[in-house]
Length: 109
Image (cartoon, rainbow, N blue to C red; front, side, top):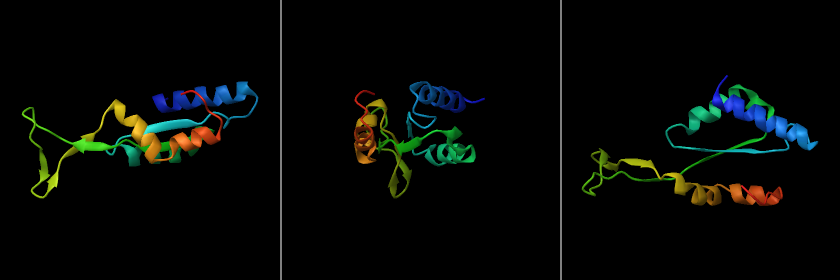
């Protein structure tokens, strides 16, 4: 078993306990640009473990040296890195996650 499978099983059980079915509780997963494709493919391969899953990538920011200089990935492009935990809020807005939650009547996350 994987952590994702374990979490999906728990979410499925919550849906069943709610009396609204296996897909009653959505699973929102924020990915990074480095793992987004692999994560989506993993869940697709496992039929989303039978639950309602929504993926959204977090944003990126330019990578900086300790001196504050931007790092180049190639001679013509900046190196970037995920924008950190605080990036969840703009990512949720950008990818319609908050709108989806609101449409489902989700009040707390």
